[in-house]
Length: 203
Image (cartoon, rainbow, N blue to C red; front, side):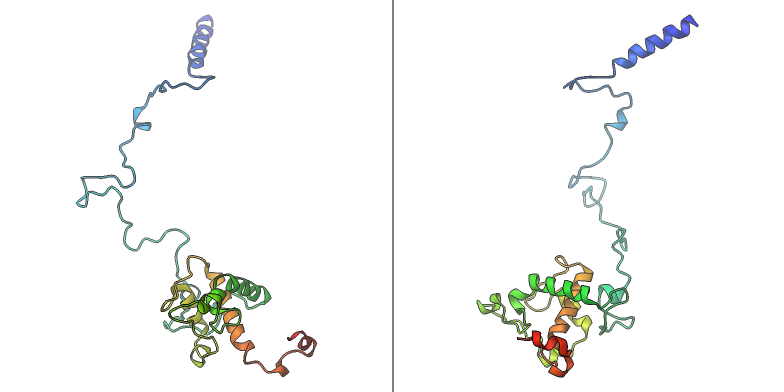
């Protein structure tokens, strides 16, 4: 029993040496060196084992990061199973006041500088000298386009218009496309289509 107590006391004393109350510039003891000094490469470093001598290897072909699978073509591409542009909101996105309010808000931020609030293409940037003026949403060609076309242009850009996929997530792009459709419909609506209770709100 006495030997066990002595061994315990000695072990406790040795353990206390590993507890440092103050910071030290002295490197710690490394009982297992390969835990701290591993055979690995830093980003952009050289590795002569590979033919291109690059330590950073490209992703395996066909690899998709978790959460980035774009399997729903109607949602992410605006196209149906046949590859044609769809003329409706994809499943999972409901047409309601919240969607249109969001679309109006995002449109005001990202689209009005060129397309204007009205959608006629005479925004402040366009009036100050764009070489290629944005088209009016009221052009028969654009009125005839399916909703998926509007989403596709917002996502991928067209002509001198750059893509907005980096600024707007998928749901916001559909919201903006829906709002553009509202602008198109509002300029062709008959006064009789407006509920009588709201006609007094028109300017």
